[in-house]
Image (cartoon, rainbow, N blue to C red):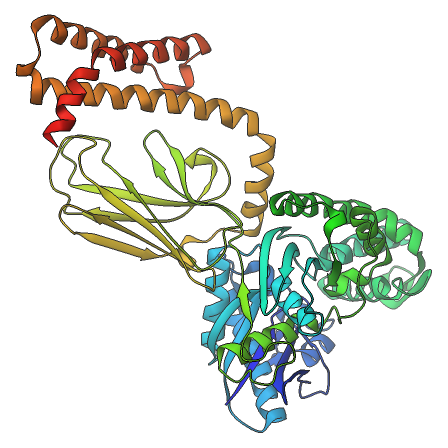
Length: 590
């Protein structure tokens, strides 16, 4: 049974398989090597996908849906004829067409697939993509990152050890990954990106330019006319493509609107210089993620053996020039930017399905080591985000850490799972919550609760918590109910940089409070359990120092000044000294 690799793109999708030890692109039923990621519903109720959906978009804009990928993992819905469709359902329509076309081309049933996603897709978006595959009748063997997949395609014929940058600017997303290619091993060192930057944004800039030009000439704003707006957007996309190889693009849209004196037409010429000017900010936005990825990988641009350009938007000359300036290297032209992601997915599919024998440079298998794009934490006392898995950790990963209760005699704890880079829980995205019940009643800090994060090779997370004393256990698989939107992911990284100093100050205050509270709790427990072994003066000093600490802890966190923190640290240090003997006796009791 054939396994296919699918690049489920924002603008176009592509599929491939491995035949005779080599990956091959599978054309669709229309004979095209890529399929537009467009869905439409005819007034007769027929569902149209791909090129046929594109052809009728101008006359049926309200029932035509594009760029669904940007909505993955969200609660957005498209309503047609009273029925609401989720992003998963709409993506499944695209996947179903790809599957049918692959079966027709290969002459056999297709049920297994590897599907690619942007490296910066969060957990909810990955789960939504996997669900879309399942809705389409596919057994999704693996969800892999698009830049990693492209590197896999490149490494098939360029297997010499080297570090590669994959610069992936597609229709809706931008990713950059630093990848090390070795003998039979492809390891992702770091990844970064922007989940809301791609060719669609370039199209919008050109469309806005054309709409403004039409309004200046005719005094008519076409933004409220959906049919006209669709035609202008399509013309903007074509002009963008033309300007990748020509210095000027001529836009001619007759009968675009009706004026008092008759039909109104849009006819103008767009130069590459004007296009570069209106999109310069978009191109410049890719510099930050590129530098972040290089920094996280711990290498300089000069150490790169190759720079791969992936995604149709990298055909824009200004983008290529920008990459040259950023890396000091000439980007490789050895892979097709539209097809390499699907090709790599097919290679991985052949490896996973056990049919990879004969793959060039791979012998029996290829080991693919990917990473998680964002840090994962749980909320602990005082609203701190305590990290268990750092961003750019190699997958799969299983990590456990033991925590305890914050209050006396708790019989349950709520585990809040967070995703993001900020040190305080409130500033990160909560992606899941569950409660561990049945904890044995004990003083604060006594129970031992082991929290485990398990991320599989698809990047999908399962969190479990276990009371080591009672053996009670609870777990949750983070799915679409705990989604994180594209904008929230982007903000998480942006905010981490913007508020770094402020975050550090808040974190210092919180650490000081936690340490003081911990010492006070331990001292109180010692007085109760081993107080008879202490002389009166020692007990008196401990009680006085605990009271001093508790008084300083009475102030709210946001009201604490630098002097208050200094006083709290001093009081905590004093308590640590006076209660040392008592706490040692307590520890000896076990």
